[in-house]
Image (tube, rainbow, N blue to C red):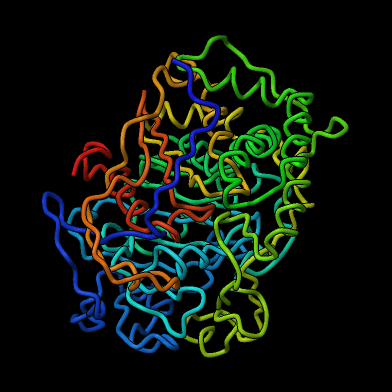
Length: 506
């Protein structure tokens, strides 16, 4: 079976969705705030080693409710190391999570993982364009213990620079840090789940592979990974080859003129992108290896030319979410004087030295990474990713269809060129529905002022599983999928943790 030239389909419904529920039923959770009735002495992870990291959940600046038990600060990479990384750990009260820990990593490289915490998956959210944080009914620590880590050194609150030269160094540094974290908080012998987005798609497979190599269930019992809108292959595949098909599909939004569309389509043909895409998106794959087109040929850097044209039509064009229009709402995660995490009172409650300069983005220079596209020694899909799939049989690759920075068909093309568990690619096209059986009032979660109309069970995209790998596409999500469709992200986490059997069940 051959897939149509482009996978995308847009729902008429506005962005964001629903509300998490207990397994087996659909219910509306309270939206006022999380409560922490336990005294400090009742906190599960509080001891003489962790007390210095305890965050006062009632005193987080601008947060008008008790966030409950959490721990944050700078943790040495190893007991004998002078280097450290910043973490913020949110335990769960969910009894099903007593033997697990989930890690969230943002990408970049050099993007703080507090982006994911504050904008998408943490116990409180501060949405762009809003004046205060709100409780998050989709908080991932409703399901599991979650730790957000700024890595590598030089990222976010983590001090230092130049301590890693490539992703192999990152994996070594992270593995050492996680051992110290697990020892400090008594998290030995836990099931470990590693999740993240963007450039984390390059880092996570290397980190997971490094941890699995230890064959040490005390610290490295990796049971699953999730990669969201990830850099899993070269930019020729995940950005250049699929971009013209994406523009054609979304041109009712982008409004590029016919002459320009004709020009980029001709160039896409000449560069071999169209042929590559039509051949590789075949189920099952028609041949063993599909040669990757070269984006460095003259005239083949098409994505950047499209971006220039898009900004002329829409000065607020957002590569993270291509349907956005002006005005662009301000975010407290923007770097600069209004950055929430650069406030001294925030640093104090998180046990960060007051002179620390926090950068939400770009704290670690991309130019410091060797190889094409900064992906040395090789893109993760051509390196450790197939092995990680085989060793966990629990890997999710998710992609928002409104992501214009990295294209969903690039992820699918990568999968179809990859061999794991005895076969190449998916044998069937990914057409099964992604069902999100939650209810919520959308305006509670989004800065866009839609009506307060409730939504029930929704099909949010597609979810397909073969041989331990699940590919998820989300119709209305952009590059930071959990931010745009938090219910879909929450549902995938339930699946990753083994709380549900598949992503089609209601």
